[in-house]
Length: 460
Ligand code: GDP
Ligand code: ZN
Image (tube, rainbow, N blue to C red; front, side, top):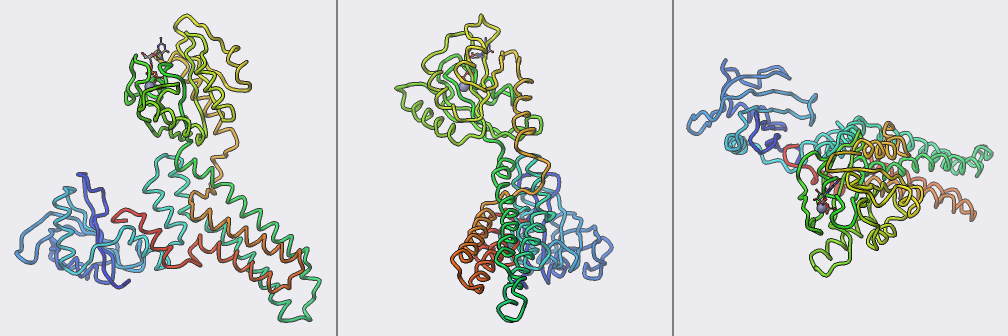
């Protein structure tokens, strides 16, 4: 299968400045020569690696010129896939790109599956599996911070840490095996305490990676922020003010925001995924009811709640209901509409909910926005999440493998406790070693590999 030569359009399919058709495999350069006529009439096979050539794509069936192009020749092994690669840079029109791709497919290549270029890079040993997955994340990255984390994963930070943990496990296995095979081997060296201590240290390192999962999720998906408040307090206005554009519909009619709106934004370096909900209140309107239930669900799952109160009216039962709903969450409370005569003070709110940041705002005048952004920054950037530590596990598959690796280590400890023989210990240590290997791709089966690469988009 690896001998097949594959091709795909590597750039966005929408009209853009240039388009790239990428061909990889044994025959890539020959395929290029069948359809490319260089201005200097030279064959691509005769060219040096990593050179670019100017000419036309010509249909060999009728000698019709399809497009004027630049063709890059990259010869194995120093390429993305470690195979011969040709990249045809054409004018980005969709029809032109598809015509050229079609010609390429007629002349000896087959259409690449999604992610197949990167899969080949992995199978040919150019990158480990966590790096390959980082390529998916980079393609899908939604915030700058997320992009940085993926890039560092791509550079192999996680790979290096896991490799180092695995080598410790291997040492331990070797140690145990040696003591089994050579009973005269000094048994003191393999005291149970020594094994336990080593396992303890290793477990801590795996746990540290595991603990980064939630932070990793926050970085990749943004801090899940939900704006709550009864109808008409200014939720959509906040959303708009933060976005600085009029995406959400602002109206005077209570309960107009029926659909949940979601936006990604970057607040002073903190990635937020922010949701505006239908007003939470008791309602007979069925559409609104659905929105209200959804809000409750969203509140439960949120990392951060921004509750808005209308300062120009008295607190109501609905406000009390919301206070109750959010009492265990990380919350910022906005006292909005302070441009109007004020009936509620920060002191009063603080009596209702202790230890919660309260900010007075007048959102229609964009007043208080800076304080909101600063509060978010203080909460997340200076808080528990250290955004400069680059070892983030952001991937569910990695998380499962780490959990399994820890379970196996716990099993070893159990075996030691109940006095099982040493060869039982090493089986579980070996399991732990294999689970970690799933992350780097050192011990992973074909199904998992196919599943991972199917998440890629075409042409990558
Ligand atoms: P939502 O239902 O909570 O999403 O509230 P909206 O953002 O749709 O706002 C409801 C109404 O309150 C609109 O007429 C806004 O112009 C108005 N409003 C929002 N913020 C303020 C404010 O700070 N001061 C005043 N006076 N009116 C505001
Ligand atoms: Zn609204």
